[in-house]
Structures are given as C-alpha cells and as structure tokens.
Length: 285
Image (cartoon, rainbow, N blue to C red; front, side, top):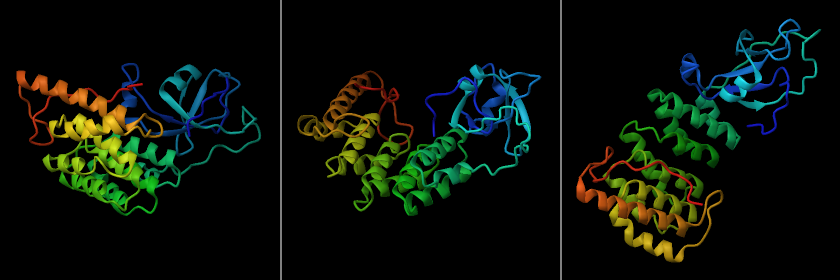
C-alpha cells in the first residue's frame, strides 16, 4: 500500500520498494521492483543517513530521505520508536514474494503491484502461469490483475486468452473490461471482431474498454456503434468518465487516423489492419 504522508524520519523496519531508475542510478534499472526495509539508524551517521536492508537482513546501501522518496515507494510504515535499535535484535531474513505471488495475493492493490512488476521485468517465462491465473484464478481481482499483466506482447496464447475472457459473459465485468483494454496492446485481426461484438455489452465497463481499444486499433468499422454510444450511453465508469465521453474521444481518434491513412498506409504491428502509431492514453477530463 502506498503511504501518502511520510514522516520526516522514516521509522526503522518500514518497507520500501525501488520503482524507478535514471541516468544517476543506471545500476538500479535491473533492480526495479526489489523490496527493502529501513534499517536502524546509526548515531555516528546521524538520522539523515537511511540504511536499506535487503531480504537477507544485510545492511546493503545508504541513501537520504529525498533520494529515497524520489526512487522508492514507501509501502508500509512501521510503528518502531527505537530509532537506533538499542537492545533490539538485528533485522532477520524475510521472504520477498515473487511478482507472480503478488499477482495472486488477496489484496487488489498488491495484485496490481505484482502485475506492474511483471510488466517491468518483461519475463516470457511467467506468461503461462499468468494465463492460468486469468482463466482459472479463484478471485476476480486476481484475474483482472492477470489481464492487466498480459499487455506484454508474448504470442498467440496471450491473445487467445484475452479474447476468450472478453467474450465470456459469465466472467466478472471488471475482468472482461481489463482484458478488453489489454487487447489494445496485444491483438490480432480477429480481436477487432470480438471487441465489436461486445461494444454493446450489458456491462458499462466492457462497453467503455471496448471503445478504448477499438480507438487504439483505429478500427473504422467501429464508427457506427461508437456513434450510438456517444449519443445514448451516459453511464459513468468508476475512476474514469462516462461511456459516451469515451466513445466521442474514440471517434475523434479514428477519424484522425483515417485522414493520416490517406497520406501514408501503415500496418498494425499486431495484425493486418492499417494504422499509424497512436499516442498512449491521456486524461480527457
């Protein structure tokens, strides 16, 4: 869980996760996603020197508060009051869950954090287990997180699993909507037909994300059903906006793409549909 209010002195035993790297920290690029604990402070180094303790209980490296908050995410604040650890045992070795273990956690936040970590690492070895979670996971929150993680282009099996999920009327709308969104980044020619077939689904989440993906695919066959959504569907998807607003944006994107197509024809990298590169999703508030 991300903590909004961070104290001036971060308590020992708090948990942080490395989430970014840049030119100043190139060696951290491959370490993104690692979890550390804040170690006990040293009277010699002072409270400005923050020790990062790895999963083995080793005081691995030091940083300061500003650097920590720039590159790390504070996931859990401890209640430890003994800043210097006098009389306390050293931090022990802990089990750090793998991204796949996080993906199957009972918490929605933890599951999506695991999915983000999977996307960052882009490891094709975990694709099969993720598909298994999407199709057979016990909780809808885990299946939705698995659909999110499958935005990585890793072959036909991923596309088939996403298509099957979108078309499954018995699946939870949240899972189907997430699968529809992921198809925008990983699809084939038939994926267009599946999205078009579900654009008037009873679920507003499914309609919303089908409209989004068809816009990202620049599918001009979607213009007629999108016009209907733009005129009639004013239901709001939690955390976003109405389906009609999404449909209007989708129509603008597709029409712009059609104009660009007249100048130069490009094929989608995922299927045989003609398109050009579209910008990533931005707020349309």
